[in-house]
Length: 160
Image (cartoon, rainbow, N blue to C red; front, top):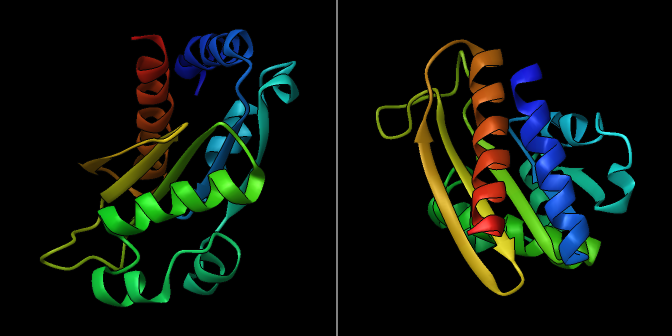
């Protein structure tokens, strides 16, 4: 995972300069993003924490994803990713939040949502947006590609 270290260091510097704190809500990555972020010395200056909301019950109770959102759209959806980003931003009282929800595989996919389907949600202040990906590879590949996409997109958005 060394190919992300430069981006993470740069992300940390941008967050530090802007005096922003970052938090994450992770489902399919199971804490991988927060692990990668905290590999950087000094990350406590800009990274507040993470909520691993693997189960829908945690998405609802801790991250405050509305039950109706999960029922209507499913855990792996644009709507859930946005609700997770907003929820963790509020729960951790951070300026910037990233959420990930997806199907890492090898089971759990469907015709509509195949293995590798991932939604990433972002909350930068009041700006909200999502990304949709269908990654390939095994479970570890999907999780790593998800983390890489979340980190590089956040860096891009904060520096444009």
